[in-house]
Length: 153
Image: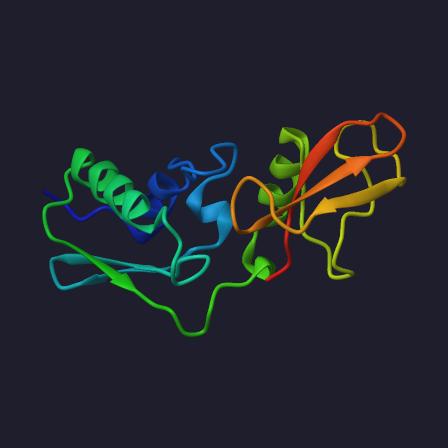
């Protein structure tokens, strides 16, 4: 088998959804740090969103499954925790997908600037903790809909 290009592998990885937020891919999330061939072994470097992320093992399994289906026989998944993942690594496309899905994307100011449902700027924090550790729960005071906010990390 001819080795697929690194660009082709990136496109395969971009089709793998995040298990906690399936509207974005693991590439959009920014946790795939590098893809390279080391002789006949494909090495994929993954940085979890935080060291205790419960989805890490599922993500690794999904990566391995997707690449094996594409014919990758020799695969090495490398976990890299330094530098730590940051929300700055989210792609612009990923941020837009989050918002379309009803999750306010991270903002440097520390909170959402508008409701992802009605786009009102009248929002308030309900709880620092949302459906996953990386999200907080907010509510729009105009449409009254609650929504998750992806915290800046």
